[in-house]
Image (cartoon, rainbow, N blue to C red; front, side, top):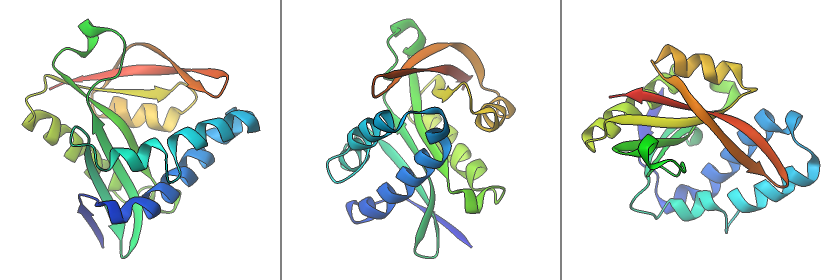
Length: 171
């Protein structure tokens, strides 16, 4: 049975390890080793953004646990996209990750439902996200939930710049 809850700082190392593995499994085929190392050192680890964001009151979290193992999470943030007209009144889904061992178990759906409900509860008029253009599974998932492609975002990974699609769901 999958349990859902808000993580604590004590969950940081396990959450970080799970997120690093998913990121690596998903994006390493598209990224040079030196850029992988650069990105991972910024985003993860004891001084990485993920761990720091666990204590940031502006960031909303939901984790999915299978027993003691964290197998998925969603992270809501204030929009970081550069266009104020695009981000006005919105909340941004920064990450929605589910371990490959748990794909198809309804975890992504539950985390998406939480994300939408939480954004609405915060008074948001839209939920934004970015998704790598070479991640068709994720794009289909978001489109199934009503997200539409409204622009592009240059996502830096080391010295590589990937094209992410900016997607929006009106709430």
